[in-house]
Length: 428
Image 1 (cartoon, rainbow, N blue to C red):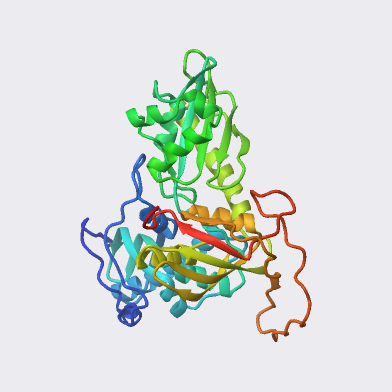
Image 2 (cartoon, rainbow, N blue to C red):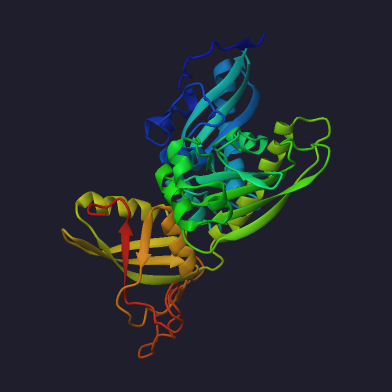
């Protein structure tokens, strides 16, 4: 007979996996997993953790003993969770990863619910992965992957009721649907609380017109990255007709780069409530935003370029924070520190793809990359296939014409040294 486990008890270490845990490969953290509640505001650290957490992993294993069944179930859960995580970040089938290497990717697991008998183990688990280890594996395997945003999108749900824009005054079904969206998905979101400071930051008309100064102010106060203005139209009654399909308009204002506009359908939901109808609209909207994000997050080229970068610092922690954020930035291939003083770090930054994409990815991590002295930049270097011999570059050849620098007049050559600043650095 299967016995349910009493809530709140910790999962013991799985015997067959104990060696891996003892070696420091997987420090197990076993507790009942609790998914973020609808409307819950997550910190940046929590958002990063949720992106690499795979919930609702079901296992049902029978073996010679309860311990063996649980042991096999945990190993199976890790394999299933990795496949899910891979498809979250990349397309196609995941690469083959042995159990030992897979264990090194896992940070820990949590039990959502479980039942067991003398020979059977049935459970639903959450598996959490180590972000840096996963990035390293995918990069080594040559996988083009997109990481989710490091900061949440701030959603401003504007409802036009009979043509009148509403943002804070009334709690419309459209706003409620966004507030009830469960956080922790691929695109993390925050919906402002509607407090006095929010009302002072931006009005409904200013949101509709995408007033950048106003929108940036409220995003900065919430510690958000991109801003998503989601617009739905309702009749003067304020109630939608779930039996009829509709559309909503989205405007995404990225931290860096030009805004993008999208129109997405809200499928008809006959017999459903207004909340259920708009919940479907939120799901479709988030899927569209995710698609838009992925398109810009995956480097389209394996060409490696190198920038000379100066990092002004006021204290050692400024450099530590900057390096950590650089290492976690998609598209950054390597960081070579050349010199370090009390006021400045000089490095060479190798990246994949184009400069616009790099600057946008850095801005997501609160790093601002700005041009320095204007002289020709280093030439691009192609990344050879794994195992290929490295050919020395011919001597005496000049660099190709420098590309235009985003935000500067056309024809302006790229600078020799760029300046990189962390927004939280001393003196900022």
